[in-house]
Amino acid sequence: MVERVKLAVLIDADNVSPSLCEALVQEIANYGTASVKRAYGDWTTPQLSSWKPKLHEYAISPMQQFSYTTGKNSTDSSMIIDAMDLLYTENFDGFCLVTSDSDFTKLATRIRESGLIVYGFGEKKTPDSLQAACDKFVFLEALRVPSNEPEPTVGAKSKSKRRKSKAQLNQDSKLINLLRGAVEATSDDAGWANISAVGAHISNQSSFDSRNYGYQKLSTLIETTELFEIDKQKHTDHGSFDIYIRDKRFAE
Image (cartoon, rainbow, N blue to C red; front, side, top):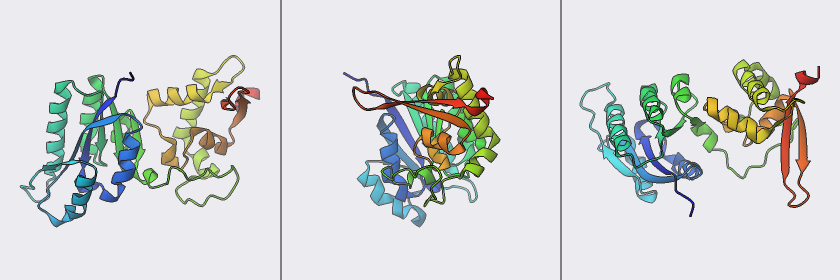
């Protein structure tokens, strides 16, 4: 029997659109079972009225937090206290923090210090500090792209404004250094690295997700940069491919 990965899902309803619920639930299912699902906010206010149907549909427990002081976000402290209580039960393998608020950076760090995995979900405006504090961080905007949308061929004009071009990718020195570093760390003597090993190495050191750049697959993002050689080796027995990549600078 496969052991379930039990996750605690905590949602900052004040800063997350309920229209993303379905995509969010589907995404979290890729990582484990949402044993606890809670959404925090002042449910007496009209601002959260559109959330209420989603709470019933996806069995999310609303956690009431009154706004006692104008201008202060009491949802933050309520989520943090609940997260620590859940952490101390030792009943979970990881947490999903759905928020774009940097105030949760210390919480994510504390959970990881306890040996649990932290998945973060927030908007592109989310501060780098919170993204870096999570094992994996996914932009909510990326979840709006249908998962069955086919990848365009490299060089073809993209219909998605969210997908970054070759020039945009190559101007991102942090991204390119991350890719090149992962390839170098996992490559053989000839400079070739299996893309699965590259992806695992990246995940171990950052909260990277290729969808944050508009690409469903890491291989397509890497191919788009045109900085790496691509070698697809087909398995004749079941028709699948192993993909190997090498920094073009290696052959220079």
